[in-house]
Image 1 (tube, rainbow, N blue to C red):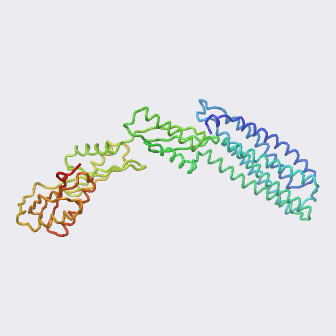
Image 2: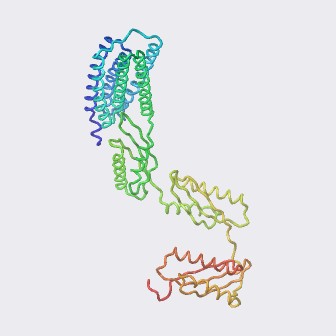
Image 3: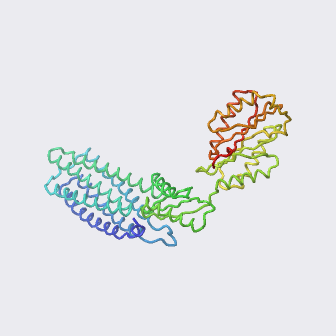
Length: 465
């Protein structure tokens, strides 16, 4: 439904007026029958219908108020007038249920004069049921179409009328068959049902007046807005005024998106929300998103200003609902205590959080800083068996076409092996890295005394690109 359709409330007013006329006619007919028969159940129904007439008059007024356009004092419109009318109706129904219930219990305890079960009493109740069924269909259909809580409350009322009229009709029939207390029991049934409906209407009205947002509606809105490419939904708020959804959404878009494109995205978000919440009044607020690569570069820039932090690497940025989660690796002198390194890392994390927007948390992995160059001797010629084994292990992997330039260095920390391997030029970096890792693992298993392995991959000579 379009917004224009939501603003045209004249059909709602016409239905409410017709319902009022019908309610007044029923009150007059039921009252005359109740006085003629002396039936408590019939009198209860008359009181119920009289209250319906008053509430319907209130509904008619509330619908007229709700149709007024927004003004300076009511920028969100006057739609809540319908919710207030529904709440008043719930309170009135609850009071009526208490009165009818009390009278029914007293009649059960102290039976009154006999009830006249004339044929016209049955005719009146049958006609009332037919009219209530018609009103219920019209009110519920119009209420759903125009999202009118006042009409929906009236529809529930007349559904209650329909069912309680059936209870009265059964009670009169039972009295005619000799069950004298059936009339009072019918009145008690009416009271209980009216009370249950009052609680139901009241709960819905309170939810609307307290701006309770249905979770299913929130999920629909979030899903529709989040389906727009380039949009990240950060917050969704929803309220109903007279049945009209009013929602404001905060979305994030890339800070590099031009203004015109950002405006187009907001319009797309509005249309998507109205597709799942027809007639919604939508406000979209746009915030810039920090691109992950830009965030990583800013983290490195912040770390460069900390002289005690060395070789920051492996910066990882994850975007989660509560904000950015940043993790990084930083090296510190090996002789530094954990307490000192932790204090420096905390200051670094605080600086990152202060300079990068929308940061939820920052975590730093501490690593020892490697010292100066370790003295070592070239022992390649003395370790010929190791060289042959290393080449064989490397060339056993399908990615390696040739292994050469194996250099073995003996250091204080152990043996270091550097090797060059050729592979197809079209091999991906990911495949190359995996092959390097497997070669290193094979060498460490075969030669435990080898402390460090460096595999240098290069495109095979003479191979096509």
